[in-house]
Image 1 (cartoon, helix red, strand yellow):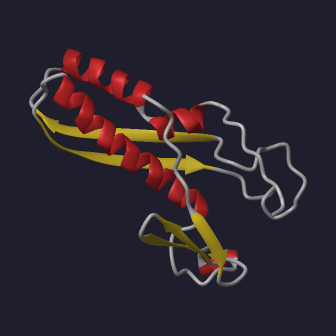
Image 2 (cartoon, one colour):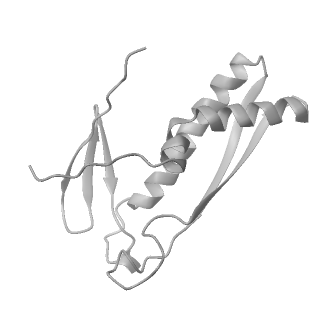
Length: 144
């Protein structure tokens, strides 16, 4: 299959609030009030976790279907820790992004543990968002 290209277009409404269009959908990205925002939407790093949860949900169901697992649904809990010092221009040895992301998936199924271990390994290996977070992806930022 040929590569697919996905696009979004965004503009700022104020210093912390960004309006993003993806296809026909509109997303609001903002910071919480305690970080100087207007709290009109999740912040960028929360969207990263949300994107991961959405991708994992899709992959959980795709892989379950391929493996003939009766999957009624999944509950996904994700947390990530980051040090905001670099974001705010402070000296730190820490990176700007998440230090680690922890994911817990609770499948609603009657599949046995051995089957679920193979299932979750396959889900992790095939999830594009997880792959983007776990591996360096070249990002090229330029002026228009």
